Image (cartoon, rainbow, N blue to C red; front, side, top):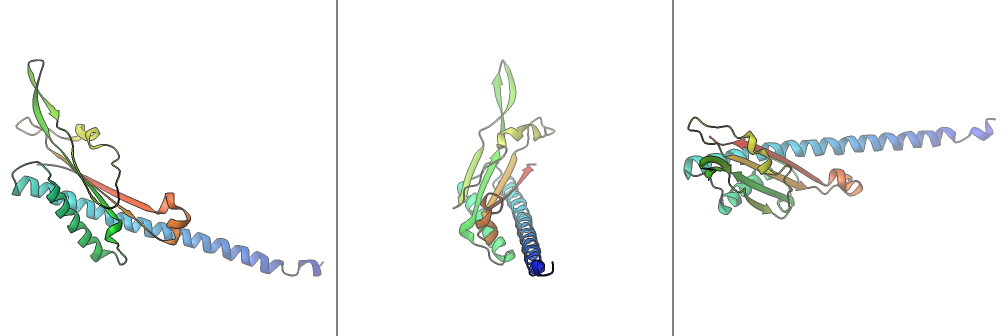
Length: 184
């Protein structure tokens, strides 16, 4: 009986080590992904704040321009470059959006209606909006003057290249974060 069981311990040990290594590698990949999402969340929130403050205070208008979105994107690239050790600027994409409201005459009465969403894409990676900003129009509160505040949203996405993203690309290759903010 002992003769037929030789090597069983080695085989079992190899299987346990392989499974344990796979679990540890998966855990490390998930922690890295969550860390990146956290950094993108903070960057998206900062970008949304910058756009809101620049459009409201400095320009005295609610519009978003291509140059402003490019400037904010460059700020995000610089910020993420400082905080992430292996950051690749070409792997970052951004979708910068604002939705304003205006009064339109409907059935003899003025009604607040959403204007078309102003969107600018920056970077080489294409970010998908989910849900569309126009679906969030009900979140805009009414001001004391009876108008609705503008809605600002920034979506940042980053395409990672790592061992885990090559093994399971649908889970690990692209991470994204978004932040939405109400105007004043």
